[in-house]
Amino acid sequence: MARLENLLAAQALALTDHIDAADAGVVPTASDRAALVTLLAHPGHPVSWLSRILGLTSSGLTRLVDRMESAGWVERSTGGDARSRRLRLTADGTERAHEVLAAREQAMAQVTDRLSPADRTDLERILGTLVAGLADDRPGALKVCRLCDRAACATPGSECPLEHTRGTTMGAGA
Image (cartoon, rainbow, N blue to C red; front, side):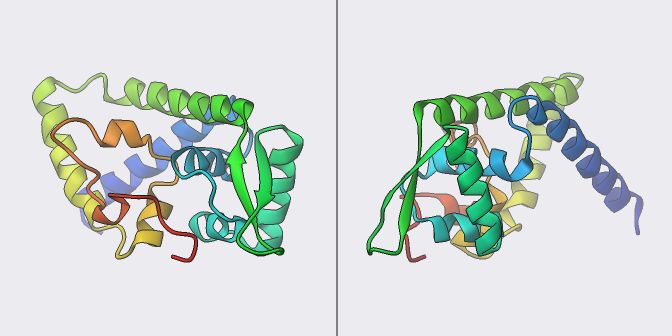
């Protein structure tokens, strides 16, 4: 492995640990955090859709949704047929999702605050290039972006580098 790849891998691991530690104070499990943030950005999708985005089995997602419903963060409603259910955040779930994003922002600010404005611009450009290659389709892009602050990525004059996330929310069948 070359030094660049090794440094990038070390940075990725350390950032993940840093973010997980910050987020765990708000919502204990990584799956719960990803579900809250994803449902904040994409409300009203079926349970099966969320399962694909989070990469959970049917039983794993059932446990996650049951846990989140018991916590008062999500509510289920009837889907397109009698067997399917759609998920929507409650007011408390919406608040928790925003808290997760705020904790993530604060954790990342502690890491990036040592960069000069020029370094920040350069790193943002480079990361945009790297992120653009992380998914080949919309479900893959939404999986990559399951904890993204959509508003931060869609600042004036820029869009999410994963073109598959742009536009309307992903349809129930996609």
